[in-house]
Length: 82
Image (tube, rainbow, N blue to C red; front, side, top):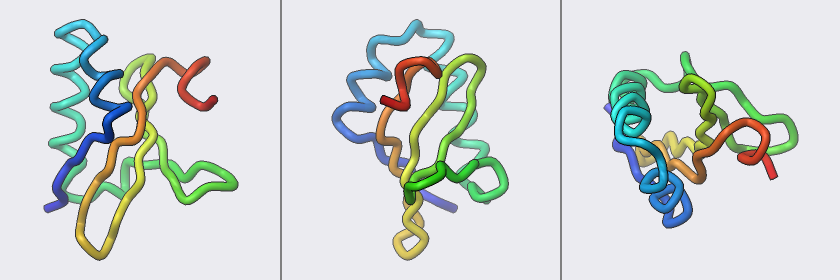
């Protein structure tokens, strides 16, 4: 099972979301922590992945060695990829 870590930016993004959205994101992250590769899509030109949770996107770095899911940023599609 993978551990989940939030970057400083992701923590700030997460705190600004509504409670029900935060709850949904946490439950999805817990679900994918068993086998994350099945649920993540690779971003072209980067070593990062994306995870879609409703209208929100999570930018994720996956560390296979330490089995860590690092959430880099959270936001809506129009602003998270900048």
